[in-house]
Structure formats: structure tokens, C-alpha cells
Image 1 (tube, rainbow, N blue to C red):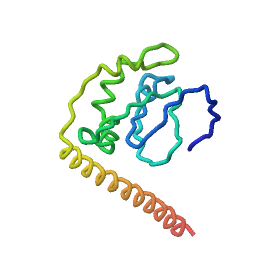
Image 2 (tube, rainbow, N blue to C red; image 1 turned 180 degrees about the vertical axis):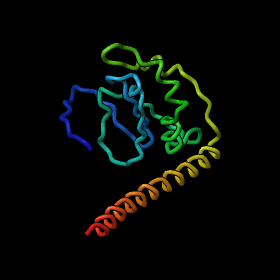
Image 3 (cartoon, one colour; image 1 turned 90 degrees about the horizontal axis):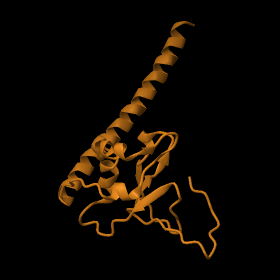
Image 4 (cartoon, helix red, strand yellow; image 1 turned 60 degrees about the horizontal axis):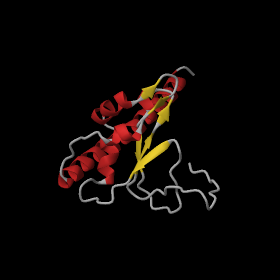
Length: 148
């Protein structure tokens, strides 16, 4: 879901590129601050909004975008970010606090292996969900036929 905005010539906006990591910086709950999304598209003219900050990794020989998508949504990463949320009625994440955090990353070869495994698990879960829905529909149909 993309909305269009008018940008005047005086405004400086940050564009979004392939592999950029976007983090939410504000939310009503501390658990929703710092939630990330990795942009894997190739569209031009997309801009970062004021409720997010972005991180651009220009060298994918260190960290792959697909691995970042899994890494930044992991329990360990969320556990690292959660204490950084500050506020009482509205929680905010300050980029300076966030930027000073360090975490270990595996080699690119291991990132690719992990990503491939997690992709396979995600695909399997999607298939299992579809089977579950189909079985529920089948059960409902059979129960209706049973009581006719």
C-alpha cells in the first residue's frame, strides 16, 4: 500500500533503495517500536516517512537483505530493541541509542544457508495453513451433509 505525496523543491526527502532497512520509531506500545521491514523492491521514487528511520547497507558482501529480514524480526533482536523504547503514552526510539547497539552476524555464506532454511520453513508453514483451511472447510461440508 503506497500513498502519493507532493514534495516541494525546498523539502529534503530520503529515498528508499533495494536492501534498505526501515524501522518504526514511534508507537503506542513499546513492543511495536523498532519493528523493521526490508525493502526488496526495485521501484524508484519511494520516500521514507517521518515515522521511520532507515539504514542503508551499501555493501551486501557483509550482510544480505534477505537475512536482515529474518535477523531483525528475530526474538534476540527484538529483545535488544525493546528496552530502548522510551515514553509513557507514546513510545519512541531514538536513533542515536539504536545506532550504538552491536550484534554478531554470521558470514555471508552462513547467512545464505540460514535464509534458505528459513525460507523453506516459511513456505512449509504457508502450505500447512492452506491445508488447515481446506480441512476445516471439508469438515464443515461433511458435518452439514451428516445432519441432512
